[in-house]
Image (cartoon, rainbow, N blue to C red; front, side, top):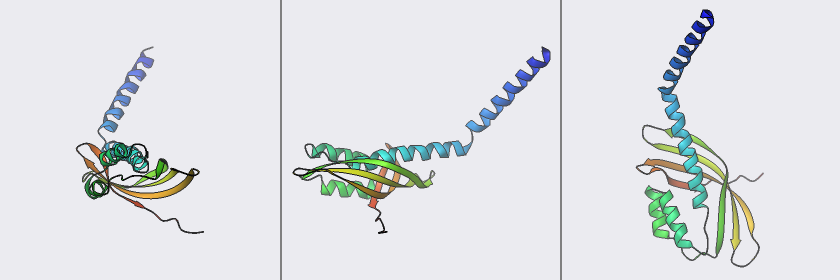
Length: 154
């Protein structure tokens, strides 16, 4: 009985020490930052690939909320205009390719399925690839740049 109690106490002490070391590990903080940038970037790329023709001002507000820097300025100047149809973007896959946690910058690649619904005609689905630059702001991660990556012909 005493041996089992001693083994239990030793195991609990070891587990507590291991947990305390892992909790203070910088790689855990880095992984958390990477996961947050990925999750936010995915949502923002989907938002910038989506436009409801019935509510273009709402779409523009969403785009501006998801962006910062040069991209934000460009979207502000361009506006949503009067769209001829709607688009619904869904990120099918994404990955963080670079992360500088100290400077608060990241790069992301993503594949997006966009369902286009014109005012007249049948809906179509298109696949796109994007590269995005993100910047951590006071309000969290925002898209600083978004560019299409051309798909090479087979």
